Length: 251
Length: 129
Image (cartoon, rainbow over all chains, first blue to last red; front, side, top):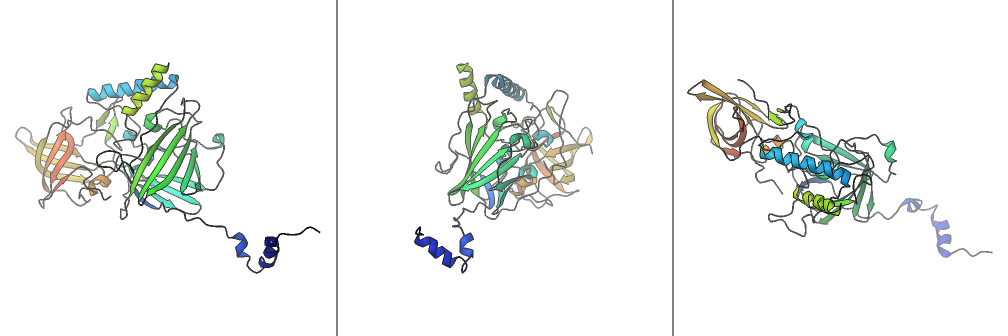
């Protein structure tokens, strides 16, 4: 007769008595990301240990690099003339993922739950939802949009979030073009008390020569109350030359 | 090809990694010029993406000249001490503005003197950190 190990015998005896012990898994002490976070930029007195490290190079494939650079040059040229070329934000079109994670000085709010993490950007009141411990969908099954589909899981002290399904018309990191094959992986980690880093890696086998990685840093704003941002009084408009103008009111 | 890629990578470093402005740049305003407007508020719009002060300013030529002055967003402004009720129709105020480059009667607020004497700017101020 096969001998059963002692732990198996004990389990047989104890299981009916303490069934809860079967389900209980060790629950790691997850970092608490819930709260409002201000972007913490490098330079100007920032602690270099807490500020984001330098971004990796953005290397586009040549066929995408040429139009990207042409657009950059046109923007710089217009700027010299005292004009701004139209962008989506001028028309109050939101930024989407990943740009919404850091817009000017607007904070982001993170609401962390056991099954979902919700991230709200104050600028344009953008909302993204990260479903925890769910499988990612195939890219071709996700309706292209501004926020795509994000799933996440905890890897020790790090929340790993993967996003697919960002619409190709949504400008990417630094305004880069991207294909429908873009995949964004974020690693959120508390690096010091009240300091959070979001390391973002963008993969796009069609547009990028190699993945690009950059990091956003945040500092907690303990008592900040988020301000609503509904774009209902947009007086900027784009003229027939694609230049941004301000609509003036008469008396 | 290698040269082109290197150039792109280098150029990318010069571009801000994140949007510096939420809505638009200041390019249309002449940030090197400042004009002082003493007048009467006809409307204070606490709205997004920008707040606005509409103001009538006495003018020797036309009697009264009307100006539309753009401010930051309520989020930005409340960090500088502004409230939705900081100005109302009929208030006398003094505004220092950066005018539009095209010469029309509009501009971007630099500083405002409220009826109670407080002077408020248009920047982020000291954000709680």
